Length: 415
Image (tube, rainbow, N blue to C red):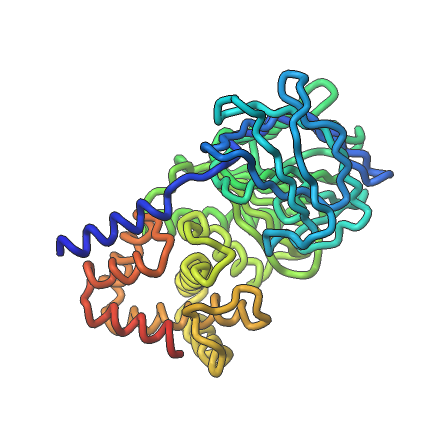
């Protein structure tokens, strides 16, 4: 037991060691809708952590006007040719900022740049007069590879006929919009629309806001209801969320999908239906399942657990028959796919492997140890914010049995 505890401590210590990171962004953002240009200026607070530089990612069609510290020029290199260092930002390019010599690690760097967004066409991004959505996936701000806990404060100027929302708390000022993200996050989402509407729901200590443009009033109410149900259910199952605030934005596109950030969810749908419920269930579950590195095969700890949480939610909401049918379909679809262990996160089969095959393994685990014990174990994992499979397996051995740990490891490696 002592060896196991030491093993857990060692892994947790290693994965939580901080490197160079951005601590905060304080930006003025001017969005020019007709010309599809963004002009950004302001301060990036950086901790160089004893290193001589920090590696960031910025939109490929960016023009950097200046990077300075106290009016002194800061050396940098913006590589617009080489591929992006982050798989989720295919159109990002590496920006290296060098620490000024003989200075302390923590620096406030002033940056001024412009982004030409004419070629913006990636998933979850948009730049049109109807809907603008900018986020991590297009690297409209200099994304730090190692940062997952930065804060941000924006002043956003945009055409008078557009309203702003996003991943922080938004307020309209005289001639600009302010968005403050006081909680730590890895993204800054800015959304603008000429037809933006909002609905608010306050139930007990839960405060939910939904922002949308083309959804019907009835469907917007249904979204709020589903968010409330999912949030309350997951808090009962996995432990209290550190904040009861949730904003969900509905992008007006037919192709279903979504992504989750701290206190924020963005989904695409043109109407409320069963698929919408499923997306809501999955993305809200990520408030508890998001600690693992999403660029490696360890991402199964994020996606499989969020997906199985979604299935538990759908079972509670729509009945056991739908749940059983989904599990049967997942099992059939994931047969003859590569094992989760060491799987390529960029593989065309990645969705099936990480989401569906992973969910089936969790279902089979529940059947072997019983629902009550399984749900107690999920709560333990969520509380500890497990981020590696090694830690997960060690906790299986500690909380359930060595045999169960060996069984799951075999499943991850062979099926």
